[in-house]
Length: 246
Image (cartoon, rainbow, N blue to C red; front, top):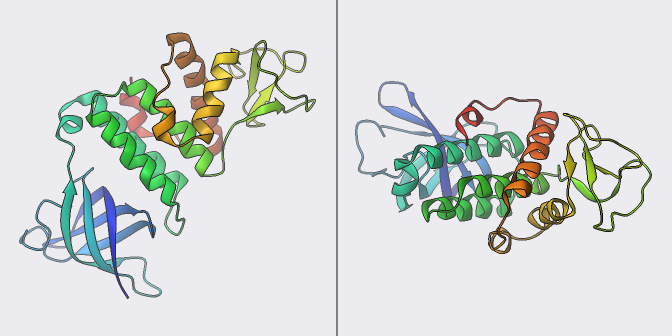
């Protein structure tokens, strides 16, 4: 069956003598891998549209029982020249794709995740502060994948968090506890009320609203430590691209 989808190009590999193997993420089909026949020798059907981190319109066949689809043609929609020319921006975008592949593997469709990726790639291209974009991406992506951090109540005693006083992140519970039920350590970092409120907001709201929030340095650092621990525990992976992030 032939499909046509807007897609973000995530990875490409040389395949055979003249083909390309392409990994791409779509709003309606999720993550897919496909073979672009002759793409390395002839650019007529795939003119500049299979480059990493571009947005393209792809026509492809999904074959029952096959892991790979067959790419017929493509049309370039959007490139990100500023993102590609800055090391910190490129590292962040590469990390975003890598985390997306883990949280939304083949067969898992989430249209909101596609729009999150697209929007934040535009934000980076437009000069968005990379540390803030990273936090917004990670928190929202984890929530969309079902791994959101519970910041509404203490995960030990169940008492609602009223937005007053510090809270403690508990890695194994994926939530916060009150100071009566936990203490701050290297693996249970604390969060100020502003940090808890921002984390809750970014997880729940569309990224277009969350981007309007200005983060103080302390808030960024507190949320950064929590998200690092949470991602490591939930995915069980160390991301190669994360080594180059600010």
